[in-house]
Length: 403
Image (tube, rainbow, N blue to C red):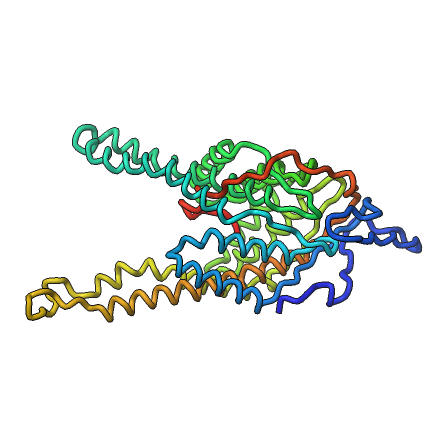
């Protein structure tokens, strides 16, 4: 299902830098082996492919799920690492795979450190709020307004740090990616953008998204070279308002259409050295995975119904009594609820990780190409050290830490 793009024949160049009619085509850029610079390092076209398989992805996901359940959730950090290595290794540029060098212990340590940092003030807030309720309710109201903003800022700083971690542990031909910039600078900007979006009733969301995307991309590095992002939110605003207006009549398909157009627009706003990128992604290509993604999301949300399930059980005083007077607990009902929740979470995770994510990656990657001149041999290794602690805040707050 997720076949190798190279088996489907050469892809046509869709834009820019075409040779004049009658001229000879540019020479091909041979690849001599992993980790080596190509003999003709000056390339004018970058091709991408994805060669994952549904069966191998499903096997990996099921093994990760089993080990995560057996370890009561502890293995999830190593499971995420194995999954990233799989996805990264199936994406190819110039027929060379990307690499992910992160480790599960990095994610585990990052989570523990985040717990140590965040839990004490959280506990202090829980205890102190009760005292303030009686002594200074006005201050409690003020702090109650500030606390969600503070947690949002922490969460967005975690998002930026998570992207930095993933990039610095991602490589192609042995050259690492990287990310500069301040995590908290990005987080405060994200908070400001959120306020702008709220005040505009969501109409200025494209402005906020473009502003944040610019910070992320302009701080992204490959080796010692920087990416550039030069998008404007103006072309997005009208399409966003149209998508919102049509959403009730299209069952949300107009929102998917907008997001695909936004992805293409952002892709073409990215440049690296003398090369720009182009995306051929289409709305029809992502509708199937998006629908299954919604099914997976619904299954993963089943644990939220646990309080409702428990509320349906009889109270202790209304339970049948044993001869010694102790209540007869509804063991089978409780076990059935637990098994149902576990099965839904497992099925939702399997659908999302084995099909939805690889399918979306494949459709985007196989429609991606770079055009322009870039000297690959001139790119030196990044001087930034790869971090040994990653993504603790995104794991705690369950915010956008990516794959």
